[in-house]
Length: 179
Image (cartoon, one colour):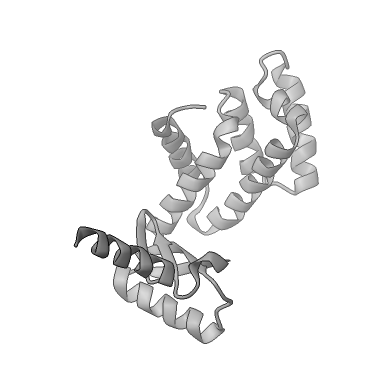
């Protein structure tokens, strides 16, 4: 796989190729291809193995694009990545391109770990609190984690906000050890 710096370069190329309003759909299309690559070793081999000709690669990609209903831009982008042998870094490209897109839209994505389902009113209060805290609109993804016991653990980018009972117990333990 190419270094992160290289992956960022291809993510920026993707962002520049696609209109800002079409990026969510394009990211979805790329994730379909990435999912297919991860599940089908033969398809991955076709894309990265220099033993296959460019013509063979293009024919198969056109068939895949038709089945997955990929746009012409995404087909060309995937062909480009396959040609320069970085298509295996697609998951990294998608992740970085998503972050760039959210930054451009002044949005952030938060991963919320909670031991129980949150009601819609709690979700909305959490979104409002996070928006006030980070000064951006926030999209939240909720993941159930019964090991937290109570409270929530929120990750926004590389920042963690831990109000879980498990986290509070850890802090208490550290304080007791310090004396």
